Length: 533
Ligand SMILES: [Zn+2]
Ligand SMILES: [Zn+2]
Image (cartoon, rainbow, N blue to C red; front, side, top):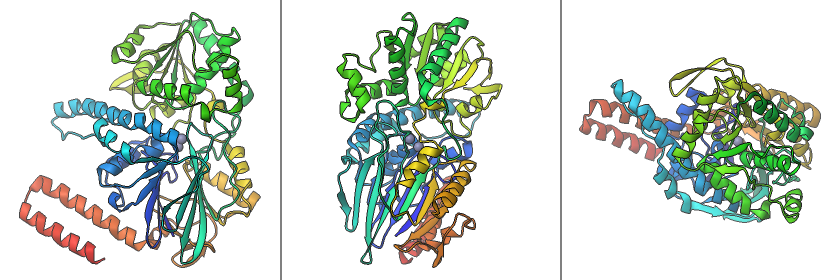
């Protein structure tokens, strides 16, 4: 079987992996790229493969960097089932149209500027309505159930303990009479988090494709997460400021509520402080969380049976409409605002930052991973001047972060999860990590566990055999793979990509010049060549 890495290579976003055997081609995840402009451009360009050629997709979890381009995939011809956990399917029902809506709003805003400047207008990657159209393709698959999804391909989802419904994917692929097992870690949770269970221990695999977000970091202060939050709230309220928390709508928002409810139950949170969730998505997700009791861990169940709901607080308000949100801009203190997106690069949070970043009495608290190039990362890295919606803002607010909220395993967590594989995998591929983090983790895995590690680049492809990884017929062993050599392994894919690229270029060219007859002639010959390949 051949695996091609189409995203989350040497970066954390855009997870998209394609596996093909002699008779089936399918994908694991199809996420959106976030961060730098250059990365985000990938969301707008054509997929490097023909979406209609995929028979099915397996989705690890609802986070946009894993799921966000699925509506585009469907819009451009993918018709097959999307296998995912029931909770993920339910979360996507809200997240897909929300992502479409965000794109429509942002493109509308950009287009106003572009049309004033007389430039070509943009189109959203997909609209809320288009996002709704792919929902019937979601096919819930329960944790721990083995399902035959194609001849010779079996899949089982295991709880990844990262967010509600998140999965590790176990795949068994039969080819030429031999069977190989491939495991995708998805995003792995940090053990001991509230609400969700710990990541499932997987006992063996030939190949592991593993996330490496915190491959070079350890989470500190896990035990005092609630205390850290209390101190930040106390300090901010004493100064008369607002506490602004950019938060992922799924899980993180609910984790914060969980801790706020602990503080409140202990009498450590002034009941006059008003707490707002300002994100229609987070509100909808919170409502799903409130009823998803099957997924709760033991501790959460105990709190529930004591008569307290850890996600319901008396001074918690949902700000649902745009007007509710705008109203919050007038608040000059005694307020906690939890809003999305978590990396502050889209959504309502940008307004709250605009009204609070320049106020020394306010605090901005980061509780999740901030990808390189996002507004969140720039603020967290200490930039003193940022631009939001074209306005320049000086950063005077107190900037804080609590890493213990991370929904990702840290270096020790990742290594521990991998240590359980017996027999050891033949190769581990590191994805979903930045260039600084990956070699650190790769070296540890290679030296401590004696497992060869590869760090694929974008569009790299590898042949996975029951004996080992082949590149151009040669067995590869370690992560010092010459750049781009791996791509050559899958010549058909390279040709397909070139074909799609040529088609797009022709399209663009003729949109400007518009010689219809010549265009048709060229496209016809191009398609003919492609048909003979
Ligand atoms: Zn995630
Ligand atoms: Zn992720």
